[in-house]
Image 1 (spheres, rainbow, N blue to C red):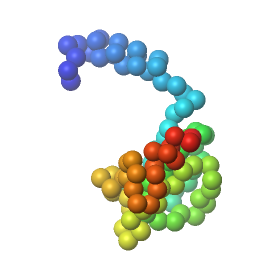
Image 2 (tube, rainbow, N blue to C red; image 1 turned 180 degrees about the horizontal axis):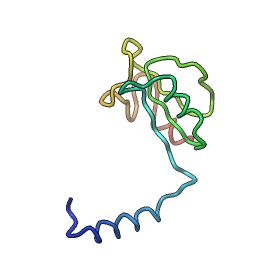
Image 3 (cartoon, helix red, strand yellow; image 1 turned 45 degrees about the horizontal axis):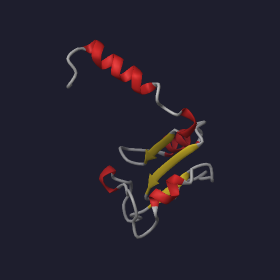
Image 4 (cartoon, rainbow, N blue to C red; image 1 turned 135 degrees about the vertical axis):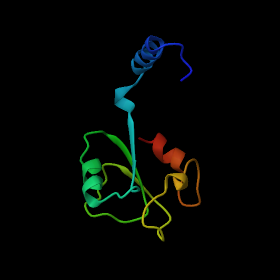
Length: 100
C-alpha cells in the first residue's frame, strides 16, 4: 500500500525473495479455523525440514520430524492470539526454534 506503483512493489518483492535462505525456511502451522486431521496430516507430510506446529491437542501420526508446541489443553484449537512467542512457563520457544 505504501509503494507508488505496482512496478515498484513488484521490484521490492522480487529483491526480497532473492534474500530467502531456502535451507533455513521455517514452516508454521496451527490447528485453528476448522482444522481437521486431514490438514494436520498434510502439514506433517510437507517436505520441509523445519516445521513447527502450535496445537492444544494430541493428534494421530505425530512424529519427530517437526516441533510441536502444545499448550492450553482445555481448548479445542490454538487461537492465533495465544501462539506463544519467546519464553513461556512451558517451553523456551526461541531456544527450541534456534535449534532447527
